Image (cartoon, rainbow, N blue to C red; front, side, top):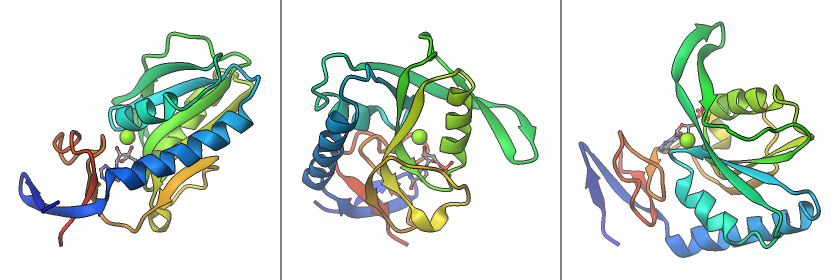
Length: 179
Ligand code: IMP
Ligand code: MG
């Protein structure tokens, strides 16, 4: 596929959909093993994770698996570690549940760290994290990631749910910026 132009930036094909799909199939196989008998609640962190969540959840063959959708509201205040974003949209109790957070990408790790802390405050039995993508060189937080699809370099990417200023989420493949 040829390059795409989104707003002021040019992007080139980076991860074709076939590769994304096969990575997700592998992640789902492991989850199906790990989560047997646990009545897991998957939590899709919107917006970026919606495609990943759909793709992985339809491959979860455990008939007691549930899914819900949450969002991090734009910051409600600040503390010493920066912006504090509030987790909104959670209607079910997490008490004694096995929770699997579905993230599109872990970059600095600040977002997922903040998300995990808010989930843990609701007394789940266990919190696991699944991220489609990880930029290991960008990490500033120590976070435990149970399922990682692909490790990628520190380039800005779009597509497959990920956006550049709201655009590009509908691209089926993942593209990276041309510097
Ligand atoms: P973190 O808090 O730095 O780990 O960033 C996580 C969030 O930043 C992700 O959930 C994405 O929404 C966004 N993000 C990080 N890297 C990229 C990228 O390369 N493209 C698009 N969004 C990104
Ligand atoms: Mg996100």
